[in-house]
Image 1 (cartoon, helix red, strand yellow):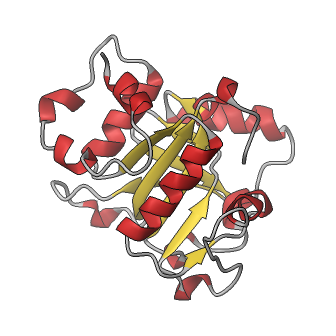
Image 2: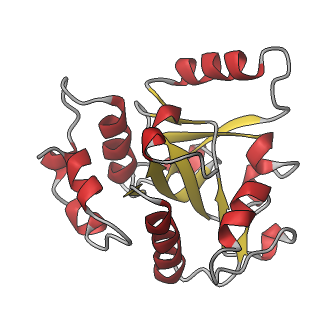
Length: 204
């Protein structure tokens, strides 16, 4: 059973993800790895959290568990479609005063497999500078949003928006304590909740 199959079998909050990350061999990239596995491995190696959500109820359950586990008392959410999802739960969120919040939840443009990074734009960030948003960042994404490289992500943006590119395009990554990430200002504590496109209609 490969790594991604293991994620598919798990539901809710997988508290053993951090413990598993200590097994460095498990997260070494191989030539047989697909982009989804490469992304998951790189994200976890950088101390990020990765969750596979097969159904909408698992997505909601995982969001709830993450908020509790990460001790997020105040959650910022500016995207209407995610707000509608959260309204189905007991999760409270703020649409303003983002700098007063402990965490943010958003969609993304692409997941960059080779670097374990998340590409965001003004569609998710609005007018906010990424540095002025909470450090705990929960990202909801689909398997179709995983690309191999940053160049593929930029190419995808050009095709998606043609002549109307978002005003802001940036990437964020998780903080790897083994390296000096201070040279990069877009360091966040990232948790990615991945949904298989063909499993359900688009949620976000």
